[in-house]
Image 1 (cartoon, helix red, strand yellow):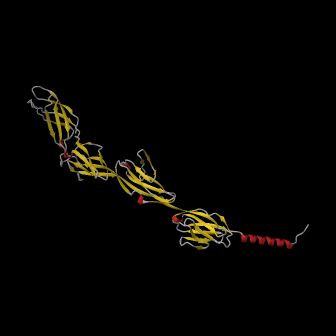
Image 2 (cartoon, rainbow, N blue to C red; image 1 turned 45 degrees about the vertical axis):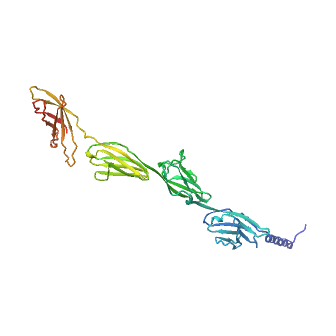
Length: 415
């Protein structure tokens, strides 16, 4: 068995080390990892890495393939675009920097090493753009249309990726599509409203989204125009004299209508006699007229009138008087003083006449007595208020066919 000496072993080790060093020095550059695809929003900064092993004395260059433009070579910037720069981490990574990215920066970027033959790899820079509504290609912010006509709302937007357009109503009400169905959200850049009605009036929102924040929207006001309409809840209203009464009308109109009240062909104005109130809600209005301290001249026909640029209409309310309630008739006995004793039944009723303007709180009461055997004969007695107390009252009556006088009558009245 041959025995190796220490000199021989050392010589082999030195040779191996030299061989390894030579292999390292002569090994060609290669890419350690691929260039990743980078996505960046418009206006932001981006960086593309290129990792090269065993670069040695070779150079690294960056090229924008889409524009066929050399950007950098090694540590030097070639392009005149100041937004591009390059950095090296003193190891294997070469970084291409793009500041304030623009849409034209989108595309393929090549990292190239000047070996023979040349080696290279490619990465993609994706520039996303948030949506932007194109006002010049979209419907203006306010449009008007006559009721029962058709109208189309258009909303155009750009961005990358291409935005999706959605429509909805600002008040949350559904959108009528082709008059056959209703949807809360409608997709598409054109919204067609067929035979539009007044209930579809209002603000419509066009919303553009493409997963790149922020989403944007446009508000379009749709005015549906129509001539006034009036309906009257109560066309016949009754009230006693001396009281207050309120009559009302409901109107719908757009554009906004001029509404007022007329009595006896004269416009009613707010005074101590009349109180006028109108409650408005969108194209609807509720007109109220209060007449205070009703008198004889206040009863009759009141008209509510509404007019706008498209037409005029009116409603009518008849205000009539309700008589004050009377006590139920009472019967009593009357005894004559003629040749022959007789007892007759007398029907007695009491009514309270209306107070005259400016009169005091006391009102005279009228008592009517009707003989049951002679309905065409009547005795009337006017009794002043100071005697308005419960008890027996004395009534003097005269009967035309008889000379006898009814001297005393006992009548029970309840006031």
